[in-house]
Amino acid sequence: MSGSVSRRTFVGGALLLALKQGTAQAQGFAGLGMSGEGFAPVVAGKKLVFPGDHGPHPDFRIEWWYVTANLVDAAGAAYGAQWTLFRQAMAPGPQAEGWANQQIWMAHAAVTRADIHRFSETFARGGVGQAGVEATPFHAWIDAWQIRGREGMNSDAMSPLELNAEGADFAYALRLEADHALVLQGEDGYSVKSEQGQASYYYSQPYFKAAGRITIDGAPVKVTGKAWLDREWSSQPLAADQTGWDWLSLHFGSDEKLMLFRLRETNGRHFISGKWFSADGNGRTIAFSDIVMTPKAWTDVAGRRIPTGWDIAIPPLSLAISCAPLNPKCWMGTRFPYWEGPIRFSGSHSGVGYLEMTGY
Figure (cartoon, one colour):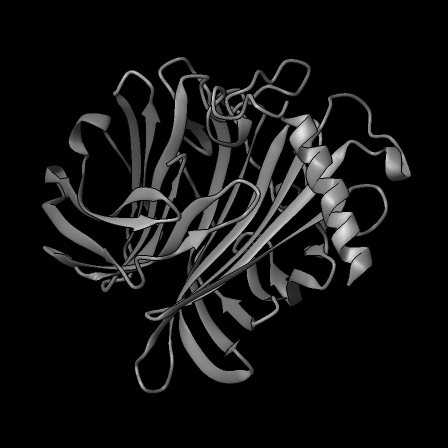
């Protein structure tokens, strides 16, 4: 539709202007290493409070609501689904009304199976009702894409939820339910991202059971599986010399969970962090020195060489696994392009998860 295209062009252009077009590579992936001066700082010791922190934090420069799901159909064929809503502030200060509002919203949706990867992207301006998030009752939306809390939602578990999105050649509608409380990443939700002290507030719901429908090229299929929600906000989540990240969320067959990320620096060093969650929801922070993330297989996609296969070792957990993608061509050719897709892993442990890689 021409109206949607013109809005996408306008808002996408505004977002690029907000990130000082041409500086994104010098300031980390998508400009996330740019100075957060004027915006609220991320400080250690803040207590995250729900349901309030399910909502937006406009005093911070960037935040997102992020869901990934590993799914199977009745025949056992594997699928992946992604739903992401980003909020980016173009300038600090009190929130202006209407079209003068300084918030830009961007969303990505994707579905994957072994032979197909489909994605869509949309933009909206804050202040005019095209996109937003409400903490109570929980509702995150951009146009018709949405995550909504169902009646009786438990805010401490952020469950149950329903989410949906659609593109030109795919759609999905899923219900997510969890019987565990949310988990706090980092130290009580304070997640350090660099030796210079960049950080974010970060919590997750990795215990979702998912059920619903995926439609590809007009053919619907019922699916079930596991899903993971991440919530993160910051004013400068990367250091200026960090060019991107390699992030994994892993569901183990035992219902244990593992989050890992490696932030790549221009000097060839990496900042690595991880947290292990037991089946009952207890978390264990993993020391930087105890994590070994080694790329082992590469895929040529979109003119780039992407490390789509990884070996992960964490000796204190007696963990040594190899991760492989369901589809190595999971390139998100969006305004700020990246690779993201479902993976399987085996070795000392087995299971499924998601891998996201930016800045390549």
